[in-house]
Length: 112
Image (cartoon, rainbow, N blue to C red; front, side):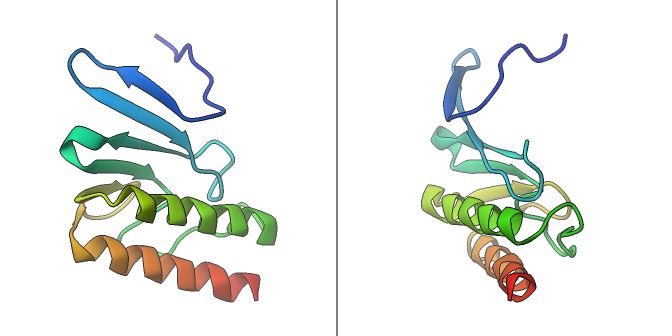
């Protein structure tokens, strides 16, 4: 079945005993989203965070990269214990900040 909900703002979904919050996180692409399972401390980041990969900057320019930086800020504010990236290994603890900071640096250099 195709998705039936368009996401333009934060939305909560009851998944039968588990709540998921879906948040727009544009930057890598206009449709990128984060899924936060607060009860488990898990964030599924799509391509907002990629572990051990170079982020793909070819789909945008400075305006999109600034949105991406804001999405990385949202990841930080959620303070996940575990982050499941769009590509690469699952991140835990301090590994999350290391990868977020790495991608931020690349975006800031590209913007500059």
